[in-house]
Amino acid sequence: MPKHNEKLVIDRATKYYETGTGRVHALDNVSIAIRDHEFVSLVGPSGCGKTTLLWSMAGLHDLTSGEIRLDGTPIHGPHPDIGMVFQDANLLPWRNIQRNLAFPFEISGKSANEDRILQLMERVGLGGFGNKMPRELSGGMQQRASIVRALSFDPSVLLMDEPFGALDAFTRDEMNLLVEEIWMETRKMIVFITHSIPEAVFLSDKVHVLSARPGRLARTFTIPFPRPRPLEIMETREFFDVVNTIKADIQHQPKTSNQALAGAYP
Image (cartoon, rainbow, N blue to C red; front, side, top):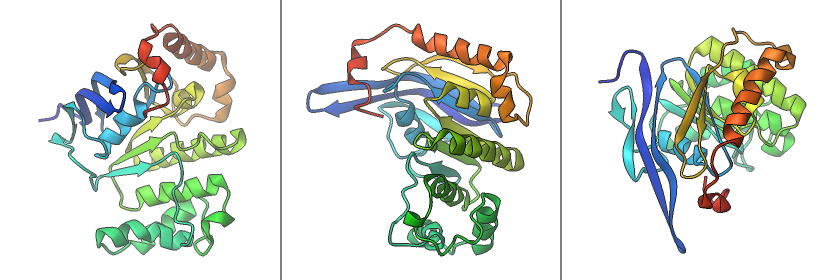
C-alpha cells in the first residue's frame, strides 16, 4: 500500500539499453516518492536519463529492474490516469485542431468530451481556433493544444517532457505562467522535465537532480517560494541563490565515461 499521500512511487528504477556496440546503463536504482497534487521537476546533465524515467512513468518504456507504482499499482503500460505532453506538439498536420484533440478518443474507442475540450481550449487561449490547421498556429499555440490533449481525459497525473524548450523566451514565460495557473486550479500532480534550472525553480515544489549517466538521484531541493509566483520573482536575489545552488550541484558532479554518449539516449 502507498504511504499517506504518495501518488506516484519510483522504486529502484534501473534501465539498460542494448545497442550494437554494447550495453548502455541509463538509470541506476532511482527511488522517488511524489505526493498527490505535488509539482516536481527533474533536472540533470544532458543524457542523464530524465526522459527515460519520465517515459517509464508513462508506461511507454519498460524498466530493466525496479518498478513504478501509481496509487500502489505497478505501471506496465499506458495508463488512463496519466497524461503526457511531449517535447514536440505532435499534431497531425492533415487534421484541424479540434479533430486533433478528438483523435486520442477515436483510437481508444471512446466518445470525446466535447464540452471539456472546448472549456480547456478557452482556458489556454485557443477559443475560436478549433478549425485552424496546425501549420496556422505558432509553436506556443501548438503546445497549448498539446496540453489540452493531455488534459482532455482529466488525468490525475500530468507528465511534461521539456515541452517549452523550442519556444522563444517571451512565449516560454507565458507558458510557464499558464502551467502554474492550471496546476493551481486543478491541483493535478505534475512531473516536469527541463534543462532550464530557473524554469524548474519557478514552477516546482521540489526539484530532483539526477546524476550523469547512469542516472541516479543525486539530490532533492525543496523550493521555498510561496504561490502564486509572479515572473518578477526570477529577478530576486533569493531566486538567484536557489538557481545557482542547483547549478553548482549539477556542475560539481563527477564525470563518467558514459557522458561521451550523452544525447544518444533519452
